[in-house]
Image (tube, rainbow, N blue to C red; front, top):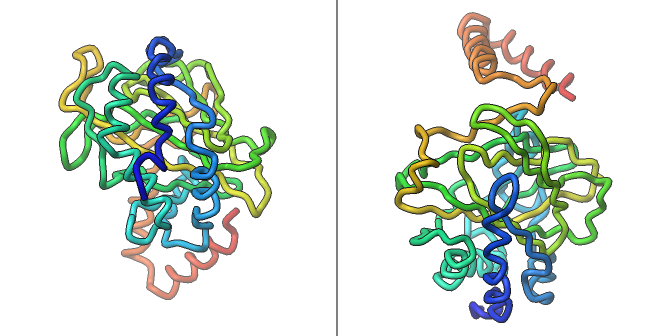
Length: 281
């Protein structure tokens, strides 16, 4: 499949002309581009996107990212999805992103660490967070996220909007913008110590619908001095007034589970696990 089939080459210069809009985005630089892909390409991606039972998904079950599915295995993806991923990691798209954002020497990630195909099930959510800041293998600085939504006919009452929050490196204060995950919408935004984002409320879509997207992350070798921070993993935070499990609390629960596993007879431990699954919400 040709690159020009999977990128709107005739639109890229028009989007670059909106560079000032990106840089002045509040609460952190971002841009929203509707109807990004050619219609026939977008429809093919929607038609080919695997359902939650039609693919070998990695499923997240942690309270902060419940019922989120992810896949980075190109060999098991439909050919159209694979071609789109290659286009978003191409030198043509990288050059476009550099012009749009003003960030030079951007490096894409063909291995899709943390990215690739994403799908959230009904009732699932992704708590507010800032992303990990250093690639765990390459030791490069994470600078940008690009998310392409593939949700045809998405209804506002289903939720799932990407929320951008204003805050400090340690807390969030105010939701500044909500971006509906409607089909063929591309969102590009910077990642730094205050780029709090997520879709924290459980999805209210019908049982046969999910929130689908393709996610791409971009890096550079170094970043502005004022954005530097100690290396960290993805950091989650609760909204103001929201009860939120602390990392120390989760660590304690994991330790307690280990102690119970070590001391209880195996028959009793398995019985407790079955009881827990039976009463799980």
